[in-house]
Length: 226
Image (cartoon, rainbow, N blue to C red):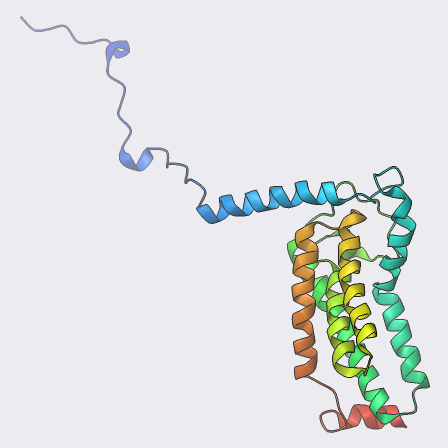
């Protein structure tokens, strides 16, 4: 006797072919996990160190002093001072040094702007946007332009100015304190400043390699001397 046909509701569900099965979600690599942990620790430590981020912060009374340090490491005063020195200098050797310092400062501004535009890391949430003379890329945090400039200027000054040992120590301390103040003011995270120091240190190597002199850039120095 023939068996009755099975109803559609009793039919077995079709087994999906291997090609139609959902692909397994890849687990994050060890490097990705380590990077996330580092960034989380960076944010946590930076927030604790932002003791001058506001007037009501733990060290809020020191905020005006740190803002003076902020101006001392800003690009505008350095560019203005270098241009003024170039206009007043009557020594060929002095003009050569100042012209290369101007080249170094412009190079720093360009490289920092490019990296900030590529990385696009936002500034710490506890930062007050009351910074001295900002442009569009200054809303980004990585790297710290003050740290790159301080490290580069520090190397430049130590290599090209004859200074007594106490003054050389003061130049190094100024660069370090400028970097630390960026975290204390809440402007940057610790890794922004650390990378900025490394980047600024390396930038001087670029300036040294492309050093402008009457031999390497005769047209530039000839036009300047006229």
